[in-house]
Every structure is written in structure tokens, then in C-alpha cells.
Length: 85
Image (cartoon, rainbow, N blue to C red; front, side, top):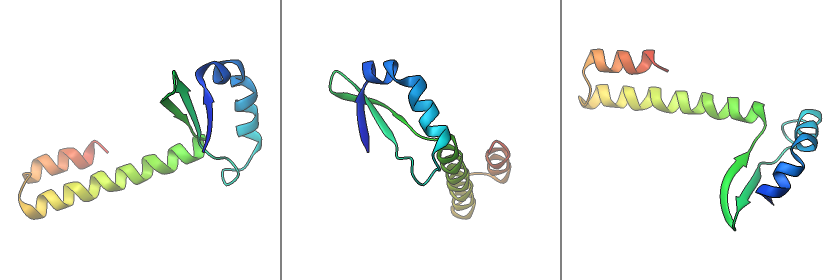
């Protein structure tokens, strides 16, 4: 993963966005942004973000199914949870 300081990110933000939009998702790696030697953010492509959101939705759905099977949530609670995804 590439790393840059918050100052570098701020100064080169426009060029980073241009580069991300021109490259395919396979060629774009996450960029870690640090401030005072501490990682504060990670920049990823929009396509990668969408993939991660889909995976998160699947995970929440599976967690709700497990809760139903194990009796940790009522039928209505699980329907509400699945409806919110």
C-alpha cells in the first residue's frame, strides 16, 4: 500500500483523483494517508468501495440469519435488520 502524509495528499489531491479515474480498479492500490506518523485515512477507488459495501451487506444478512437460527433475535427484529440493509 502506498503511503503519503496529509500534506502530500492535500497538495496532490486533484492529480490523485485524475490518476484514479484513468486507471482500472486492478491497477489501483489503496493509498494510506498519515498525519504525525499515524495512519488517519485510506483512499480507495469508488469501484472498490462499492465492492466492500456489498460484502458488508452480505455479512450483515448472514449475521441476521445466524441470530434467527440461534434465537438471539425475534422474527420481527431480524426482518427490521434485513430491511435496513
